[in-house]
Length: 372
Image (cartoon, rainbow, N blue to C red):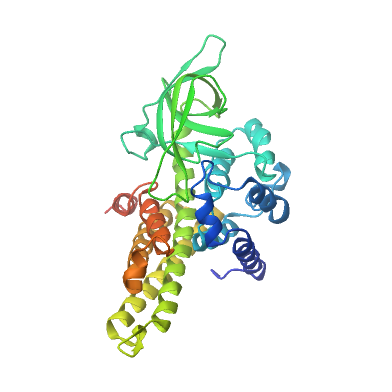
């Protein structure tokens, strides 16, 4: 079994890195995170036209590139290093994976070609005020309407890019159980309220539905395993992004430790700073191993995917959070300032740590899966 990336995958990494270096430097990230939409539509379109990243994991017959989750893992890791303000995670991971696994071929044919072309944004609305990511805890109600359709009533919170999504995939509850619904943002009774999250580079919104017309996705009452699978895949993609963020924090710290002079010598020569950097390196390499294995499990839909996803999300969350905090410590006073990028990574680390459940929740899930 070979876990090394192929030459083509490494070329993809280089292409993505060059694109983000050119179109999403730190100054552009800071500009976009202060805007209402939170992304540049021209850059989004260019990414679709020239790189085809939105359709990377979408089959060719549905307008995509026909690659798999390993390629998506490579892209997410590079995005973690640059924190681009783009609705990529919500659209290419949450929305796309839901459409691919929901078992609704008609809906997939309707939306995936537009997503691959960069013409449509999508997201998944799952979390509610109770704070549970388990689909069995969903309370938003879905009832049949007089014309044979469905109506949604309830609220979803912390919906990633929910304020700009063109397609909202909503997890609701019917008499038959947990079900999935597609909602157009302009539908009657939809109220979208942009939130002000800690991490301004990844926008979130609260969505309220009041007798909102919706279209059933797949079979009624059969969405719980679909949502579970999508959450596993999302956790793997997020873990890869966390690896990229942690690696950037490590490299930032090492570079500063070499150039910052204190008491007549670089601070990197002091034992305490050496220990911090060494610990960060161990965490980054361990996190990378966990994320890459999970990426392979996701690409092959291996039976170990639930275990690999829980393990990767738990470890990579801790590693990124620790590396982001140590990066600030190594930079000292300047690391606490708004002008320095260290706080951008720390805020991304803290919010990503809680997405789809915190490390403790994933370790509990891991124990359940292993029968401990």
